[in-house]
Amino acid sequence: MSDQPPAFDLTAFEARKQANFAQLLFKASRLLNEEALRRVREATGVHDIRAAHTALFPHIPFEGVRLTELARRVGVSKQAVQQLVDELAAMGALSRAADPVDGRAKRIVWTELGKAGLVHGLGVVAGVDADLEATLGPEAVASARHVLGVVIAALEQR
Image (cartoon, rainbow, N blue to C red; front, top):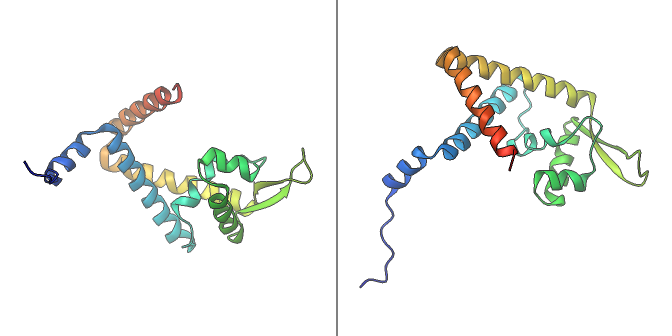
């Protein structure tokens, strides 16, 4: 009897990943995000923007949000979010404003440049979407959009 663990079977592991629906969604999401960021960098010349920055975007409403709440929404430490907010502020996308409820507190808000960047980003994503539709065909994209809508609805109910 050997004390050695069984040999790792990389081929079997990769096959299991390819057969896993959630794993494919993770990979598709990562690749889509990388492509969108590549296009944004190419179009704007802003090479500092990273996926960690864009992970904050859906969690910052236009009326702003306190840093501690943003960290809670994103699920990371206040210090990690602070660094990302500072970087986005240095790029001109975010700023800090007095909280209307508590004047001692600050809210993270979009600047006009940041709002314009969000609109531009939606255009970039629409371009990726159009390229995928050209490659896959409108029926396949419509079917995938439907399935993803069902997946999102199911996960949001949990």
